[in-house]
Image 1 (cartoon, rainbow, N blue to C red):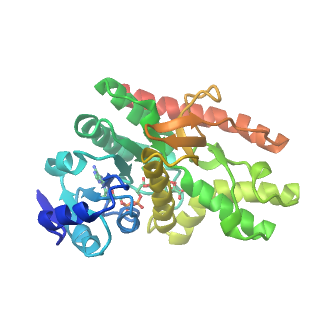
Image 2: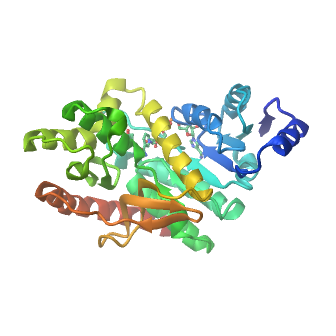
Image 3: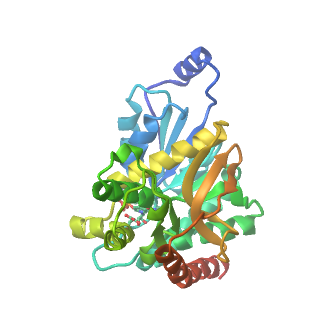
Length: 338
Ligand code: NAD
Ligand code: LMR
């Protein structure tokens, strides 16, 4: 059991705080799985985020080194590393936002669901602790299979009597990041201007990019749109195969995770019109969890937005994804209640 604080002493932290403008609220962000392939670059990116005042890095191993390293960066937040179960309470206490990239990644030939047996238990334990030590925090779930780990979290929170569906998010931002990148390449438009909603879930065919709603619009053939859809759905597998046994997306995921966490913090701070796609409890389809555009606010989810008009191809994709997403949700619910 071990706790490491960055070089900034408590006294320095207090001094710095008293000089701050006062317009940016204090926000503690905890990363669970912070020493992993995603966790380390995500810790770096959150250390660079001026909305964070306290960065809490938790893992079962190696967090002292990550915290000491990231803690030397001269940005706003204090950094603390926590290692092992005995320190999980301290890592979580006072957290406004908990980001969870803890768990094993895929190897070539595996589906995300093949990770269920290991990651479901990890998520269950971490969520049990969250319920106890920071029940009001927003949760950004990255651990796969997201289609099941989010329902697991919801069930654990219900059992603990503190479930607030507005505060639980499955992170699907990487699907949006990929859809934007791939679309910009084919549509020959500046990638920074591109927006594409991605709905459904976060595995294979459950990932449904809505290129009919992409902006700026481009006149792409149905063959190109089909290829773009498939590449977005298989984006994770593309990286798993390229890494050839050394894990799955970590750097692009850290970028996407930092983007979504920033949107959550902006929402908490009352910034208007913060909209991102996320996998949340939902009534916009018959499925209890579904990814779509979500407006973020001071309490988390402010509004789950409608899907908007879908092309015939997207309507087919929507119907085709429902059985798999439904069974992944049910598998998570069953696991949490067994
Ligand atoms: P990794 O193996 O490099 O890192 C995982 C980290 O989790 C390790 O440091 C490990 O020690 C830690 N960990 C294990 N059990 C823990 C526990 N009980 N408490 C705290 N930490 C624990 O894996 P990675 O590449 O960082 O991927 C992590 C997860 O994120 C995987 O499940 C992966 O499939 C998923 N992922 C999701 C997305 C997405 O879009 N949502 C994208 C990429 C990866
Ligand atoms: C991704 O989309 O990159 C992640 O879900 C990791 C994976 O297993 O594909």
